Image 1 (cartoon, rainbow, N blue to C red):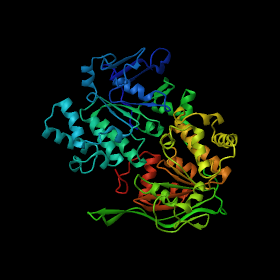
Image 2 (image 1 turned 180 degrees about the horizontal axis):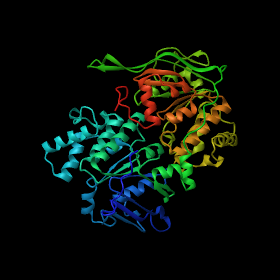
Image 3 (image 1 turned 30 degrees about the vertical axis):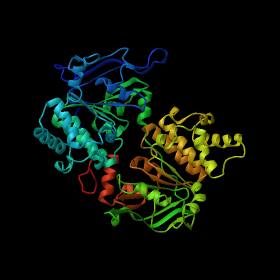
Image 4 (image 1 turned 90 degrees about the horizontal axis):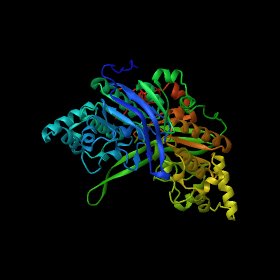
Length: 552
């Protein structure tokens, strides 16, 4: 990493935050979410804000742009200076000139930040017209220039595209182009890579570093990925429960952290090794030459003119007590492979569960087997009904498969045992999903799966929406449950660090086909294929490898 860009003493910092406090609500219902935070951002400097979800990172960043929901949000104390000008309490006219102009922001999920009804050209042009008063011709030229700068392929041809027509990485590049359109002095990047594949993450980080070097702008980076922080940040601010517990330059913080919480964060990376592979373990789920093709239909008569080969000729065997990791970029066919194995997508090719052919089974034949096959999804908040208590959520599967106890007390005892097994108190069954943290909700989703005593569990990105410290806890939990119940896991993830801690076998997929397959240790230590090497470089070194093997 290059030496940190130091603040010029003659000019002072670009942003100086002093004694920032933020509270929501009034009177007895007032809740302090940020308390007495002070730090500055130098010119050309990257400052990282790190901490677990709920620590106050995003609230602190939004305070700079004064974008909190005022007056419900208010500042008992604070001063935020931008080039010496006070932003707190500034007139709306002044803030309008600053937002999107001198200070810009890139959010975590570009699909929710972009208007789905407007083309890329219209959304970028709106910003240029508002702040620069450019006419249509000049705006179009500037938009093409910006899209080329952020590395969007075929920029001119993409002007008429809508957000849903772009990949996740391409949408994030458009968001960055929007943020850069007015040459901001400060770019706030709020978890800009969390929703992206590791290869795209590495590309976006490399892009931000390159743009910063060329433009000399400052960056406030909000992230829970400490690998990215170490790669790009000059200084790091660690937040916990709304307070700033430590601030230091990056190398000092990583080499000699002072606060116990910082030490915990640095040690929170998923660790440990997969359970020892047993050669005598029997296959639970097998598939040979599995194909999931989606027909492409055209014309009035809807004739099939081709197929999208989402999964094309994949062999997979998952044994009891073993974990098969499936990795690859978005769209490579990972989740479709799992859905095909579970007979939730129409597929072709032999599928065996406990040695029995199930590829010809219909709905009624599959139903008795469903309790043996469970899924834990990526986002527990979306997979848990907000209108049902935790007890009702877990009980639903028991009732469906006639596994519920004869009495109310019997059922509560079974649910309590499942919750205890995943590290939650039995009384949690009387509460609702919104009352729990992200990690706790994922534990509930796991409890819902294991209460049915399954043989085979599909884990579809079960840690990607969680903080690193919580990721480590969930990995340890999954490993313990596997050891206790001899579970077979199909683990889908783009986070190779998590996969390495759990999987003893690895399948690398690209465009529906297997690129590389074999023992996980061998592939992690010496990947044979260019695509696999690019994935490893992106995941472990946060390096964007220039190759046609990966997307954008």
